[in-house]
Length: 166
Image (cartoon, rainbow, N blue to C red; front, side, top):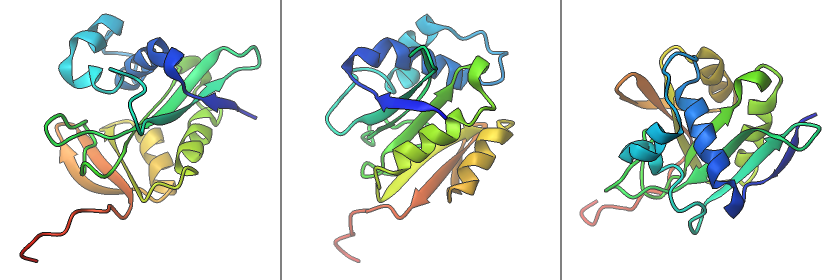
């Protein structure tokens, strides 16, 4: 059983660590906290946490120590995330610390975010991250695009603005 709690304003440092864990899922990038904070694309996942509409959960071990987290955040077209689909679709970020992987933590985090019942959720999953990809596909995500060495996955039906001529 995984213990979950809401992600709050005091979790910004934890979310930075989780972005590091997400980017370095294979253990070979050597990326650190400073790299996340200095990278305009990566920092947008945590800067100003929490903004209006942000929501997330943190998984903690039996001693209450964080071992993972997942959060949903909207991005504007001018500063999209890696899994951007539309300004109306929240992008999911999810990471589990290496020591807690393979124990159902990621599934519990994902299920908790999806239980918030958003109409649609997008994310990005890198080539080779087969365990994460399989977890997302089992929960109804489908491939809708590609950015670099990652697929953009979408679950649900986005609420996209209608074209005036359409």
